Structure formats: C-alpha cells, structure tokens
Length: 413
Image (tube, rainbow, N blue to C red; front, side, top):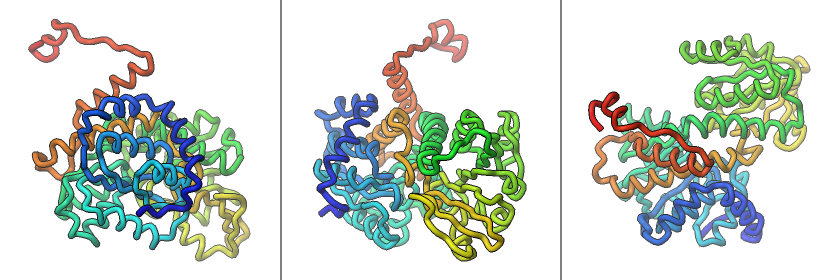
C-alpha cells in the first residue's frame, strides 16, 4: 500500500507529467515501441530518484514495458507531492512525501526494497547502501541495477574497491549522453533556475565561486559566465584546474575565493567543501548553495552550531548571523538547490538521460546472468541509439562514412 501526502493532489501532478510528456519525444518513442512487446514483463524494479514529473514519466514508461515498480524519493526536499499522487492514481506504488524526516526517508527505502526487487534504479546510492548494510536478505533477489549520479558511482567504486559490492551496477552517469548533456547543460541551467527563483537577485556583476570543475561544475561556470558573473573555480585536480584557467576562469583555493565570492556553488561529491575557515572570510551577505547529491558539501551544521541567530529570510533561504555581525545565507538547507528549490533539469535533457536509463534497465534484464564485472559501463550502442534518435527528433542530420573511408580508418568496410 502506497504512502504519500495526499491522493487528492493528483490532478496537479498529472498536469505536470503531461507537459513533460509533450517535451520528451525519446521516452514517448520508447513507450510506443515496447508497450506491446513488454520486454520487462513482471520485472520488479526498486526506484529511488528525485520524484518529480520527468522521473514520473520514466516510471510510467517502465511500467508500460511490463515492469512492476516500487518508488521512493532520493532526497527529502525534492519529492513533489502532487506528482507522487499522480503516480499512485496511475497504479504505481509510491512511498514518498516532501520534507519527510530522516527516519521516514529510511523507512520508505526499506518499504521499497522489501518487495524482492530484481533491478535497482538508484540515484545517489541509498538503495544499494541499505541493501548491503541493513537488508542483505534481499540481495539474492537482485539481478543488478543502474546508478544515475556521480556521487552514487563514487560510493559504488568504494564498495568495489573494498570487495563488498554484491551485484552488477550499470554506471548510467558515465554514459556520454549523460555527462556531456545532463551534467553539463542540465545542471548548469537548473542550478541557476533554482538560485534565481529563490533569491530574486541578479547574477551579473557578481563573483560566483564554483567548487569542482567536473561536468556539473563546467555547466554551472558556463551559465554563470553567460549571466555576466566573474567566475572563480576551486579544485583539487591540477588537470581540471588548468582546464578551467584555459576556459577563461580564475582558479584559487577556497580560503582565497571565500573573501571574493558573492555566490558559492558546490558540485564536488565531497564533504565540508565550504566550512569554518571559508565562513570566517566571507563577505556579509554571501549566498551559499549546493548542487552535489548530499547535503554535506556546505557545512551547514557548523553554521547552526556557531551562529548567534538564524532565521528564514524567505522560502528556501536560511540566514545565519555570525558572531561578528555578518550574515551568511544558505539556500535549500544545503541540499540540491536545483531540485530542492526548483524543478530540476529541463525536460528535453532528462529525455536523453532517462532514455539511457530505460535502455540500460532493459539490457540488464536481458543480460544480467552473463555479466561478470560489478561496475558496468553503459554499452556504446545505447549511447549511439539515444544520440541518433535525439538528433533526428531535433531535425538534424550527420554524415556517414563511405566504404573507402571505412577501409582507410579501420582496414575493412
């Protein structure tokens, strides 16, 4: 039995899902292609993902291909209650609501996993973590799973290194069509959607500090520059730091950047990226937010312990007064600003990412018994199919090699 906020909210969620459906032609084509053949017939899938309209459409597409889904959120502040209600009304079991407690969040994950699920669709690694640490009795039912995020893959790599990962996981985040587009263009736009709608402040003319110059950081830096900001990058990787410099950005340690920045965005996957030493140097009125999966990159706990006072300045903005009178402002409690204070990535971007998810799950259901490695790259043919279909739907064409060119490049046609 589903557990959600209020089933009466379903009409609003249905409206959101319908808008997304109109702007996700890839998922629409997959739904139509596999609705009759049902390649996932009877496959039980546990889903932990940011529960909003685009992910709801993915769930419906998997359901129409025959899967049985058990769905929860991957962040207490990203679940949209009307979307959860719409999924339940559509016959999908959901265990999630906005702003659930940490205990309720864990209970919802347990509820999803207790259904002997065969495939895990994870976003950040919480399903896999709970299976291995608290519910090992469910592991024999699992064929494998897919991981959506950079943070989740970091957790999986650590488990693989320790020899504790018990089933194969496809690294969806590392697919070319995922990190080139979702992580760069999706994160870049949606982070500033969340910041701008929350603060109603201008970006142009400000100094924006982006921590981490991976694909998500590149997207945030590019969008900040486009909005007229001076962009500063903080990094631990010298190669990425050089890349940032050659892309036209300043690079410096966080303690130096802290004195300059007006707006701080963390996208590293690490913890305490902005902490005591940086807080002590920041300007009065500095705004901090996080676009990494977990709420550990900005050390909000330090601010809570050491602020003279704190108060909500407006929805999703908490102000902390430091002992010297400066105010620092944290967006969305340090959680994912693009989802906790926005609607997440644009629909057209997630159309590509979720098409990869769908095809990866189909591949896993068909090939799991033949997979020997624990961490599996997305097959290149899936990336190619998604890119080719997306290009066609955008009205674009590309060249193809001639027979002579194939012989020149590969020695055979």
